[in-house]
Length: 513
Image (cartoon, rainbow, N blue to C red; front, side, top):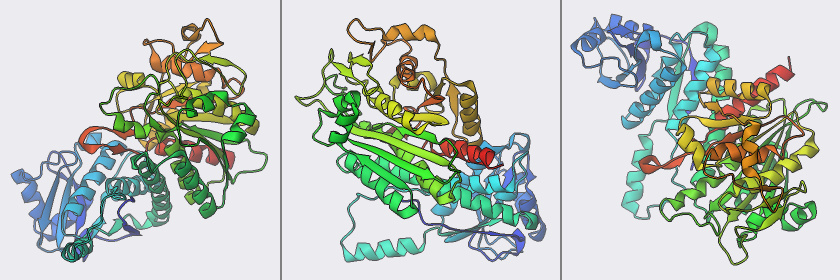
């Protein structure tokens, strides 16, 4: 249930002189060798250049070629990694090359490797950032989820398993220029912390819904709080009733699983500093309620708590970094089930804010639990509130699986998040939320309806949430298309932990300079 354990270290040295299982160097298109590849080519009497000229390695991005016993070198293997066109080589291409190299080394018999990819020139990219990207990408590729697979009991199979584990890729030495070693060390710490948070978010999403319940999420948050010494409070149903969270409790009332309201407090900034509040949607299983979803692919509705998972994952990352910032995490979590006590289309709920909501579709439940959490967030007098939710299928139709939908009542906050998304390669796209859309939520029987019809579904969902976020700067990330993958590679992605982390690190840097 964790990334493969890879031990990283930072060094300075020459590729042609290394005694290693595998040395990783880059090759661009048009027969252009990287500096590290040129160094090996020089001691091997043009061995690398000849292979490239013959066309065995064309340098296409993310292509790989494993060479054995290259003349003049001490390493058992030399891995050539395609970098694409030198003129196009930037952050995204760099990460693709790192991922490809990790897959190739993992598939080989090498137990350790030395990579020179972090030494590649990338415009305006520091050694810190390059090594951070490298560590995160390497650990992301090596992630495996096998926590609930049956353990082999047969002795022979256990022996085979032990032998396999001996061959696993376990050590990676990252080579940089001597002047960049200290900067690279800090980048490595950053990348490992981010990968730890992403891995935890993936784990939580991938767990089955009979394991990852609201109670499990609460216990996970509490164990993190104990490990990293930050405050965690969990409110149960009776306390939520006293607070008047009628909207959240309305969704929860159809399930046997008790709802939980989790509050995490990472208070490492100045006491006078207003906190950033992250609010994560935590529907641990979404049947759609009385407005029952189709049966096909309903198993993927265990991922409807990926907003909550991303908040917990981000808290692990910023705790690992000991980030000097005040951050509050709020997670309303429950199931959405079609029990005899479940809310019905036509019911009217009274939210914590006092606003009433006509439920036209019980499958639009995420906004019903988030609205009470957004009202609760007011008590922290936040500098900004960001909610993260797998909220609408409409957002997937609009943006596909590449960008998260971003909505905000504040242009400056939206710009910060967009920039963080670009820097972290975890991109979002700014969607409109004009007042023109608000009348679509009109109701004859309550202050508002919980849906606005098929048209502009992701926008009307954001408009609904905006009504509960008028007292502070607020942004909403719809991650329905980015938080998990379907099909053969089905699983959580850990997004948008990288975006949120980058945003918070930038805020901390600004607050402390």
